[in-house]
Length: 356
Image (cartoon, rainbow, N blue to C red; front, side, top):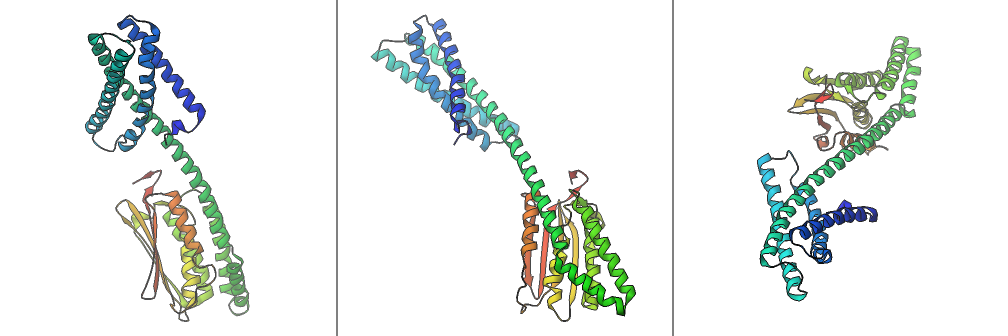
């Protein structure tokens, strides 16, 4: 349905606009062929009303042929063709209406006058439809701007909500309980390790709050936060947890949403390494593929271990977040093969304020 027809006031205003055009056209025809105004209005009125709705079809013409999508010459030819077809159809309808009025009511000019008026109608029909095309392009541009603004607002709200969820996950009592329990156990046996774990935990929480308050952060900072988290877990798991990081230098300056990688490594430890007696290695990779930044986190897992409570919630949050922030370009793939669980994020590679 045409958005102009979605509301009584819009329809009334639109018809009033065309009523003004019909009045001008009536005055023009009276001047071209002197006759009673009522006769000219009887001819012009129905035609103007019909063409008012014909011109609404320009919306679909404009949507099917967006500006900048192809050659400007091809676009101009398509639009001109649509205007010519509409004008021709309107002129043919006018010819039939004029013939009907002439034969049934004796209203209207002679054959030569009808030809002259049909020629005027054809030219005006082309111009009016062309104006309708321009108007609809402006309407579509305004709608696109509103959609973009609404999407940005929704993205901002969703990002904040995701950041808060991620932060709450980091401050989950289970994580804090395990960390404090480990510190308590280390105090008597290894005071230096307990002190180091306190420092790592405090640094991690402080950095999380700092990153979570920013809309975008360099990938190097996001990876550093993930490594802080893994360092805490390494104190708790000891030799059972190993970490490998491979990030191309060119991608470390790419901007990413904060607190994006940390939920992935937390998932890798909590639902992967922790379920294996022998532990395992959490691998973090970051590289560039064309215009996309690819971040992958993988870990071993025990296929025979039953899923733990909350498994998958963090990944769903990450997926929804990147799809909201970067619609059309962002994606998250999850694979399980040969005892290895892998999560791959694909985002637009951004540096500074612009995509590169």
